[in-house]
Every structure is written in C-alpha cells, then in structure tokens.
Image 1: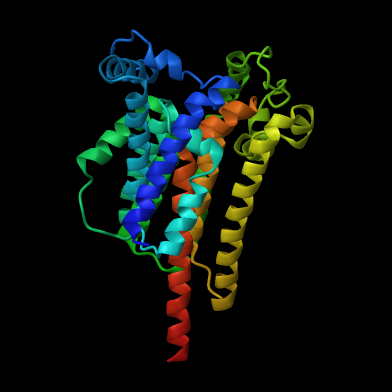
Image 2: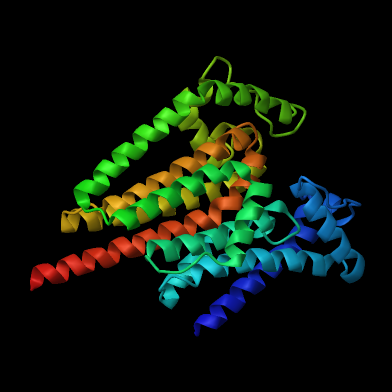
Amino acid sequence: MSRNKYWIIFYISKIVYMFFAIFVYSKFTMLGDTDSYIYSSYTLNYPMNSTHIIGYFASRIHTYFGTIFTHIVFLSLSFYGIYYSVSRLRLSNKELLYIFLLLSLPSFGVWTSIVSKESIGVLYMGIILGYFIDLMENKKRKIKFIEYFALCLLYIFKIQYFSAILSLWIFIKVSNVLSLKSNGKSLFLFIYILITISFFYYFRDYINDISFKMPEHFSLNGGSTRENIFWIKDYDVFFNAPYGMFIAFWGPTLSEVINKPIQGIVFMESFVIFTLFVCFLYRALLLTIETKKINIFYLSILLIVLFWLLFVHYPFGVLNPGSALRYRENFYAFLVVFIFYLYQKIKLRCQVEKNSNIY
C-alpha cells in the first residue's frame, strides 16, 4: 500500500470519529464546549481569548456551511498538525502504521475530530514539533511564518506549555551552537537541572499560591471530580508532583473504574499508551546497552519534554479524570511523534556504531 493511502485512511478514520462523537458519544456525555462554540455569538476582542476565537470562527463557519462542515474544518486542522511533524520523519510504511494506530485511539480520535480546543492544540503543537525536528537535524533555515503563527496560538491557548517549548528550544539551540561532546553534554544537562531547580525555588511561593486556587475551577458536583487531597499544605504542589503528573496523564484510577465501570474504557486506553511508551523506551535502552554508549543529547531532550509537559499538565488534570484525558490530547500527538523520532535516531546511531566496530 502506498504511503498516501495510509494518510487517506487515517483522515477517513478521523471523519468516522467525528460522526461517532456527534451521533453516539454525545448521547452519553457532553462534548465539552463544542455546542457553545458552534452556536456562540462571540466577537474577537483584545487581549485575545481562546474561547472567543474558537467560538467566533466556528459559529461563522456553521452559519454558512452547517454543523458537519464546521467539524471537518477543525478535524482537518488537527490532521495538518500531525502531518506537519510526521512528514519530517523517515518512516517505513510499517512504522507509519504504528504511529497512526497510536493516534487512532478513541479519546484522541474523538476530541481532535470535532470543534474543540484540542483540535487546535494538535495543530500548533504539531507545527512546533515539525520545527523542532528540523532544529534537531541541525537544518540551517529560518523559522517560517506558519511556525510563528503556531507559537502565537500556543501563547493564546496554552501559555503554560511555553515553559516546555522554551526550555526545549534553549537546550537544542545551545547544544547545536556549542557542538558539545559527550562530557560537555553531560555537564550541560547538569547545569540545566540546577537552573531548573533554581527556577522552581525562586518562584516556589507563586506556584504554591496558584495551586491552592486550582480546586476553585472544579466543582465537586461534577460526576468525576476528585476531592482535593493534593494541595493541602504549603508546597504540596511540588511534593505530590510525581504521583500527580502520572495520574493526570493516566486519567481514572482503578478504584474509580470499579465505582464507575464506563471509565474502564479510557483506563485500558491509558494502559495501552503507557505500555507502548515503555516498550519504545525499553527497546531504546536495549540498543544503548548493546553499543555501550548513552546518547546524552537525546536522553536530555526526552527528559526535558516529559518533565515540563507533564508538570504543567498536572494541575489541570489531576482533579478530574475527564479533564485529564481531554487536556492530554493537546500534547499527546506531540509526545507520540517525538518519542518515535528519538527512538529512530537512537536506533540509527546504534547501527552506525555497530558498523564502525565491524570495520
């Protein structure tokens, strides 16, 4: 099967998810703020408001072209974000199929195939990732207009992600400029960790105060909202971060599934995602052990991306498994493609090491 056919099938799968969301899923639960966007009377204002932006454009597209076409526009935007990053990878058809399978799981399929902030999130995160892949390949080019546009969307929709994106950009840029060797990269990672710890220490009170305000945005009358046991004492936001980051990414706990069996579907989905991520990382570890060389650069950027994205996501997802899953879709494709890219690079580097040892 040609590569284009894989892309066509993937696009069709998103259309199927769109119809499933509209005509089946919506019968059991609300599709977030989708209807309020489509039927809104929002106007564009300054400073820009992400809810107003989606409502303004979605309602106007709906007025002239109807509901289905409006969803297809947003579906196509998320599709393009995926294409922008994935098209930069050198993939076999089998590898492309693996990525599409990971990006065709139910939660991601539903929330990024309708009018939603998650569809826009996949768009700008995918474009930004495409730029980062070119940056890591050390391509000499200027940042494109569409990539500036993606950064603007990131600022408007998910400003908290800027810490992850900026940290990654600084680390890659400095590494490329200095052309550091193995020991230099290790030292640079150590310095980066010290700077990160210093940053959290300096802003500890500010971050602590914000954490106490988060429960106000979640009503206990909501069916899935958890009681706040995470931020009771000062600086709990830091002490409880490891578990909070994990559960905010995973979604429902086993006890919540027992009490509400319908959540078992997304529990199993998270189990599949987590298992596949661990398998990829385990295979990368085996390749590293085989060649007896650790690539500090790829290890560093993986740690940076995982830490920052999960940390800034955790306050918004830890109190409600439904919110955790929906907000996760903003950066889920970013993580899938990014981890796959790193695995490819490690695999290629190991093959080069093997060949050099033979000769």
